Amino acid sequence: MFAIVEAAGWPIWFLILASIIAVGLIVERSIFLRANYVSPPALLDEVIKELKQRGVSDSMLVRLAESSPLGRVFAAGLKNIKNPPEAMKESIEEAGRIVSHDLERFLTTLGTIASISPLLGLFGTLVGMIEIFGSQAPTGGNPAMLAHGISVALYNTAFGLIVAIPSMIAYRHFRAQVDSLTIEMEQQAIKLIEIVHGTREK
Image (cartoon, rainbow, N blue to C red):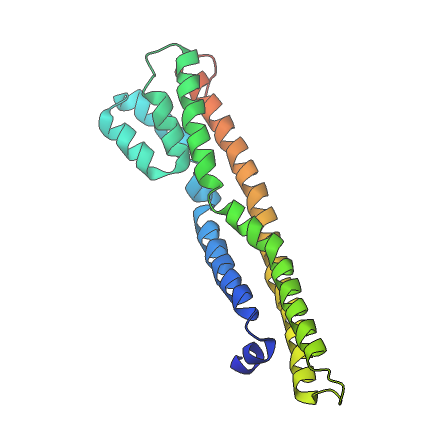
C-alpha cells in the first residue's frame, strides 16, 4: 500500500485525507439516520397512550425530547397542548426545521468531497504531466522520471474517482433518506395535532 502511495506522489495525500473524512461522515450518518431512531414507528401510539393516562408532564416532555428527533418535535407541540391548534402547529414546525437541519448535518461536506475529489485527481494528473515534461531534455529523456510522472498522473486520476464515486452515491442516498424521514415526521406530527384536538381518531 505504501508503495502505491509513494508511486502516486505527494498530491495523493489530499485524496487520502478526503477519503478518511468521507468514510467518517458516511459511518456517522449511517448510524444517525436510522429510521427506527429518527422516527420510531410506535412513538405516536405511546405518546397518545401516556396522554390519556397521565396527561402532559415536564418529565414526559424531557424524556420525549431526549428520545429521538421525532420525540423533539412531539415535545415542542405538547408544550402548547392547551393552546389552539395553530399555536401547536407553529411550535411543531419550528422544532421540525431544527430537526431537519440536524438530519442534513455534514451532508454538504460529503457532497463537497464528492465534487472536488475528481478535481484533486486532475491536479495530481497535472503534477504528473509536469514531471513527464520535466524529464525531457535535449540529450534525451530520463526513464525513471518519466515512469514516475506517469505513475503520479494515473494513480491520482484513479484515486480521485475511487473517492468521488462512493461519496456521491452516499450523498444522494442520505439526501433521499433525509427527505423521506422529514415527510414521515411531518405526517406523524399532523396526526398528533389532530388526535389531541379531537379532529381525528387514532
